[in-house]
Image (cartoon, rainbow over all chains, first blue to last red; front, side, top):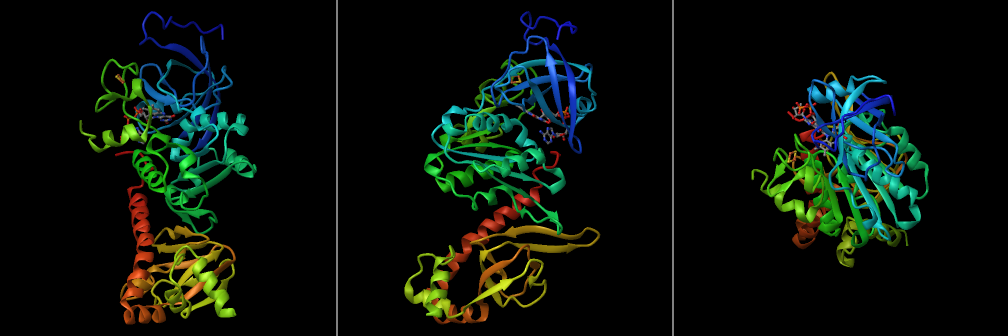
Length: 281
Length: 155
Ligand SMILES: Cc1cc2nc3c(=O)[nH]c(=O)nc-3n(C[C@H](O)[C@H](O)[C@H](O)COP(=O)(O)OP(=O)(O)OC[C@H]3O[C@@H](n4cnc5c(N)ncnc54)[C@H](O)[C@@H]3O)c2cc1C
Ligand code: FES
């Protein structure tokens, strides 16, 4: 990407590099996926995020949602919820924006080698955890059972529906989806995503779980997994907090003694549980 | 022989797994095999809750009609699940519809029969309550989570 001139981020970690949108995919209402290119981009680890900034509006953390093994691929899936995310979602192919990253502690994917892999995702949470699935499926033989449980609010709000169907057709991965409610024409499962945990077979003592979605859903899922016998240290969650610097300087993202941007966003439940119980710290 | 088969099926369902022989016989005395075709209703809102269904195969959708929104499914229950918890508490009336999503095989327990046996033998009653309560509590938690509408934008 030689035509885009970027400031040298080495000089100041707060100075973004420039990225260009090469492809825009409309996923579901208010949600788009951008494939992008950026000077100096050299890959990421599943679970990491970039700070994306449409010029003159602000900057927000957005996880990488593409395959980490394809180092040149820079993919983000974004939902418009407020001013910055909406400005991002409205950008078109060819648009240039600011990018800093990748940041954050990744999902520990290799940890699940030789074990059952349980991915529990809700709503847009499927995007940050999708790189885990790409990694696991590329090295399928290294893992025992692979189970994906995905919940959305309504059938029309299911993210990556085509990809979920493709995975579902494979024999080496179990995919179960559910919606919170549906009109009677829907013939799939209806109920919260945690209810799917009661319907699948896995070995809790030999399971590593990756959970991503709204915080309440993650708490319920982590509790249900622990109740089933999965060790708290084997349940990994990705946390969201408003961020400013993303490099552990400003304290915007503080949760008790940890900074989500620097120490997370991925944490295990053993570490997170006490922090979530004293949220007001 | 047929009763023995039924006993095995009832005892094989997670709701009654591990139940002692004597209690299992009492429960099986209220049981029969039933089938529903996809689209058929197991029961309708407002009717008397006189049966409990232990699902063996297939899926049942619990539905409610909401004014202006048409009919909504708020929960589906699959194999090894149980449908019809309203049998537990007066006034023993269904609060919503239950419709077979596909062909359903189930054990139907006559609720009046089971309640009668539970009243006559509190030890059985306690055992039955202990077995149904976790499902009631799970559903309560699920409902709370659904009510929170966690996938919407935070306000
Ligand atoms: C590590 C990390 C990774 C993230 N990855 C992604 C990602 O891959 N894709 C993505 O779309 N978002 C992701 N987010 C969330 C994203 O950063 C926020 O949605 C964004 O900061 C909102 O900024 P805004 O200015 O558009 O809205 P704001 O003005 O900050 O918020 C507007 C309204 O939306 C609500 N809101 C804010 N964030 C969310 C949210 N996440 N979900 C629901 N409601 C919200 C606010 O409470 C407020 O009511 C991530 C966040 C973190 C911390
Ligand atoms: S965002 Fe500044 S410390 Fe985390």
